[in-house]
Image (spheres, rainbow, N blue to C red):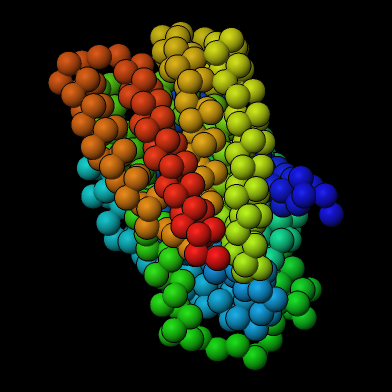
Length: 445
């Protein structure tokens, strides 16, 4: 296989999977905006901010990354038993954490949403919506962990197929519920119900794929048992990665609260711009995951020179793709925004367009940050990305947003300038630390 193909064959299905999930989120927000208006967009944004924050911190950027880092190294070393053992234990840990996240949302969701700035009817409706959403996330979490296992083995096309099934189910049910069954009666909970059904479908598909490939993975076939030592190793790698996401997500959650206190117009504009910008995160995030997997495999093969190559190949492709989004956001922000707002929300559209244009600056910086953070994780170093994220989130982004938006009452555009600064510092530090780790490995061998 061509060395460039090795990167693209693993990365492109992951990118495609994220394209599907992102457009599912975008269409979700577009449909609910047309169906129920600006208030419904706020409900969806608040609920997703609360529930997905827990999921991203603990699962997507925690246990999943720990699994990929460890499993890929054993795949590279051709130790099939250890790879299967860590797969089994990672999924078991994830199921336990999924239960905790769901229960926490039911017991404390009301208080969390109040802290985020929701009041009155908005608080009551969002809490009820979030309870259904939390159950949906339970099935999404388990599917994500199984997909992490497939990615670590190099079968990244399976998560893509899972996401396509979920996308079709979600959009179809949204359309049926909003514009046929409940077209004359607004019921925001139908969006959460369609999410629940679509994630159950994805979960069933993942289980079927595990059974189909169990002769390769030795998973769920009675030969593997829970290992405390394996669980500890996964947790050891997962915790710093989880804390890294926590540093970013919690600071973002607090920033969301500050924006909420600044007015619903700022909040809506920021949510719309963030939703559109989330499209551009796909290449950076995907190549970051691919870098973790490929670097892990090369480390398992004890081929350190190839570690450096695959990381820079991933960075090259990520930069090309994300710079393309920079041009799109810079020259066509208003065209993109108009799909998310009605005719009566011109001020929201104007602000969202300005934010998106500023977001064009962030794209290459995000690519560098995510890819080389993924490289560090593939090397087994999940602590350094955590330290860098804590520094940029809590010592740069959060204080500056509080000062300029809450104290000085600047426009929402200030948030986006500050975020660009954060990503710039983050990317430079990730790159320097990755090169230093590679240098140490080369001198060692």
